[in-house]
Length: 467
Image: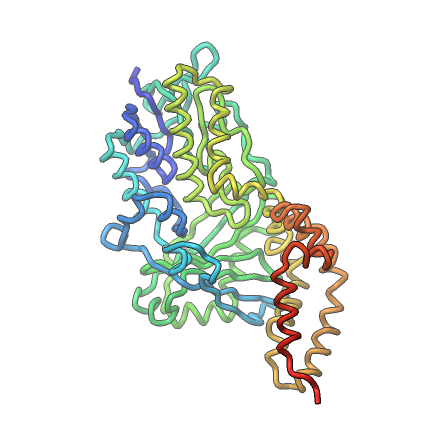
């Protein structure tokens, strides 16, 4: 049997980060990739968020020379599609004044294909001393006295060591370690998408600094469009409990939109691949470890509870897993009880902070853009009435305001229950009950935030007197 300190199943961002961190600690490490190289079997591109540059020095080394598909994007476009399947409006967003650090002040995401990103990242693990074994499918776990002690590959080769499961949503490690049989239908989404090829210069000339787009819709679940250097994805997803038709029916509704077809035409984009994958999406991770085993990234259910960002949580949890494994090996105790340290470590990170409101974030997202017929059918016209109604020359603005107010009143029967059921619990969790009281108690609000009273007083003092 081959002996290692750390045995990692998977060479995606989580597996490669774990391998790099382990090797840098002097631990004898091996990580496995079923493809001929990391990223070969992955069916997607990805958006890399600014937090990765803040928390991982290695990200400062990435660029088009090592990752040709990478594209920086400062702007995100939001399209709004009504029940008739028409784009009734769109708005553009860029980093706001409250953003606290670079590069988050400069761009939203850097987008690239995983077939570029994964092999680039894995090389840092190899350079640190980890052994990468490609074209190898790990098929099972090895047990002694009822406990996992290593893994076995499809050729029967055995590898002993502390096991890190970085093998994605359909995790063999999680299943054979007894952490779960499979995800529950309400915990996992299916995500189909088309990949288009188009000229990098056309993307730059036509889309400018747009990184991505979200298609908010009353006829299909929220769709996403991500631009790379030389291509883009258009895809959507929803929890397995939602679908009343084949997912392809809804994806084809997106690409049939007149506005989308116009975009394809002016970009001269050509479809080149259909892709689909499963994505765990839940309010809180659970069953993340057992004796001598830790799960990271998608295998552990760590994608962001709001928009399911996966790369950053995979890398952060990989770091926490190796810190925990190193402590466990040093102490000679890899029991489930000792490995509770892993949960303490990841909960102390920004990923843990994300999950403090995880159930509420997941719930409001499920109830809003992923409930097109029930919620978006009234939310989109209400939102567009608020945003677009006032920018209108059909009547005097005072008249338009009254018209808009009357129209908004018709949405209250749907909006008020939604706010009470979804928005208030989220605000209460994020702000705390004491801060929520301020929103309903003006006197207490002025006491707690005297700057508001000072501003109001100054406004009245400076106001000109009527003649």
